[in-house]
Image (tube, rainbow, N blue to C red):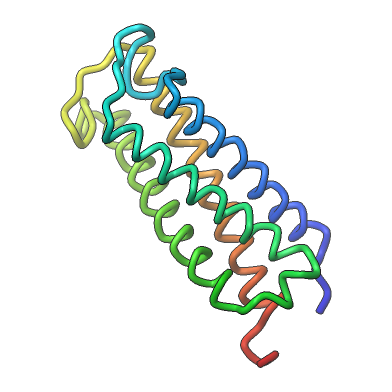
Length: 161
């Protein structure tokens, strides 16, 4: 089994992506503001949003585990299902969220749905923050799919069992 440098870079980039994404959600859960869904000073988080931030943070921790399992020696020794389940779950969620955000942005930019899927008429600030966030999620989806593929087919293939 030979893991190429580019594949390792993608896995480590996915790990760093997960750390940043998780840290942003921890920051938000504890009252911080990173300006995605409202203008500065106008947003007040509720308990449902707090729980969502905590759940996303826990999923990012699982993503860190998956990313490192793809490039570290211990990734071959842990039971395959402990990496495969969070890997596939993360891929599905990130691709759905990243793809949905991309489609929403395309619809907004082309004028098909000028206010997006949810009909929100936001400020330019929120519009651009949303675009940047959607792009960031899409980058994470690409990196995580690459990392999952590396783990499932190169690091710990089925024929090893």
